[in-house]
Amino acid sequence: REQPEETPQPAPRQIFQERQRITGLPLYLQGYLSVRHTRCQAFTAYWTELRGTTLFFYDDKKAPTYSQKLDISALMSATSVYPDENNSAQFILMLPNGELELKANDCECGKEWKGFILTVTKLSVPPDESLLPGQLRRMHEVLEKEKKRIMCKNCPSASLNRNSPPSSTLTTMPTCFYPVSRQEAIEMLEKNPSCGNLILRPGSDSKNYAITIRYKLDAPCLKHYKVMSTGTSYIIKLEKQVTLPSLQDVVSYFVTQTQGNLKPFVTE
Image (cartoon, rainbow, N blue to C red; front, side):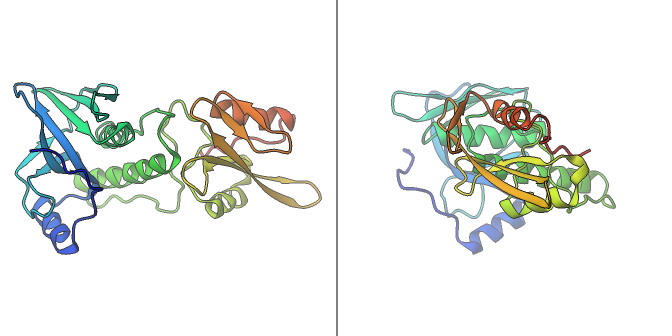
């Protein structure tokens, strides 16, 4: 059957509760995916849910019970997302018992699915700068939830410190990037001056970035700078705009221009 073209909407609350009861796992991502196993000829469309490290496939968006499920905790690798002739986006999960080919509506949707799958199976947000800040923020949130779920599963008495800011696990993102709001960034800088005074964070539109700094002159001074992403470069919105090739270069620019008075915020 063909995948519906309409934008998927969240399942009604009653269906969600029933699926939650049956699976016993937290929901991280949901939407339509077309699936093809190694030995199959054609794709089959399913309403798909990523819960923990398991993919649940439903024949219908409103079906309370899944028709298939797949444990992906032993994921070996995932190929790059690439468009096909119908503008859908395909990628392949490499598992110990074979391959699973997945097809999403478009490249952005495909990258999101691949990103969330890698986040929960590798316990690390993938180092992909093409992901939007809003997507990165949600992946970090899911990462913290999955770590907590695993910790509670292995040691019920263990607990996480909810007050500590999420640490960046990205290898290509600056270490001072945190998926926090403007106000949260201010509070982090005010409460932890020894950790640094410059934070890179998602912008308010979830598509671009922002720099928040706090430094002392006669009195503490807070400032925020917009960093626009063009897809191939980053533009710092100053009186005279500055264009740089990477987010790391953006951070370095602020450090260099202030002769080291600004230091990237890094938690211990």
